[in-house]
Image (tube, rainbow, N blue to C red; front, side, top):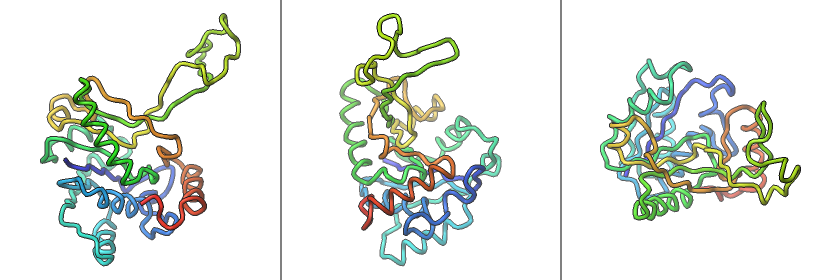
Amino acid sequence: LTALLPIRAGSQRVIRKNVKEFANYKFGLTELKIRQLLKVNLFSEILIDTDLPEIETILDVLASDGLKLTNIRVEKRDASLAGSDATTDDLIVYLADKVKTDIVLWTHTTQPFITPEIYKESIDKFQFALQESFDSLMTVSPLKTFIWNDKGEVNYSRKIEKWPRTQTLPSWYTINSGIFIVDSMHMKNYGDRIGLKPFLFEIDKLIGWDIDDMDDFLIAESIAKTFMKDKLFL
């Protein structure tokens, strides 16, 4: 089982997002996420694909804290995939050839509240899902609200009830991009980080909080400092 952590140095919405100090972590989201993955203790390898110039310094800091880094492999990201015009589809195809194990768990730095316990649970859920004819797993957050497009309501009918209780609305989900687990051969053959029948692993909105812009960053940092003291999210 490989934990795959792609990290791009450039960020258009939050400058230096992945290494900007976050809560008590000098090297921010990247330092925190590597610490979280190291605590899982189920990965044959943690593969970090990045163009971050600080990555070796971060690993030195972790080593100085006594953490064992023997299962970490750093791959320098190809320059053609380091720009904002590179697509996720291109990155998946590129990284598929870097993986050496049968199963891949793809994750990101930008979900700081996905803890080692959540990673372990996702792996357990994946093993169960395989027995139930699913071929992959991805984390989702429930969406129970009124959804419209430019033509009107989408997930309910105002002809039946204009304002139904949101609890009674059908289950919709947002893909929070926290965790994807898939067979590495599927990545290579189909160029995707999920299979044809993914199991939807539902996690709370807070746990799946995704840092995309500065507001997301500041809210997450406030949560981390206020409600998750003493490294409770490690």
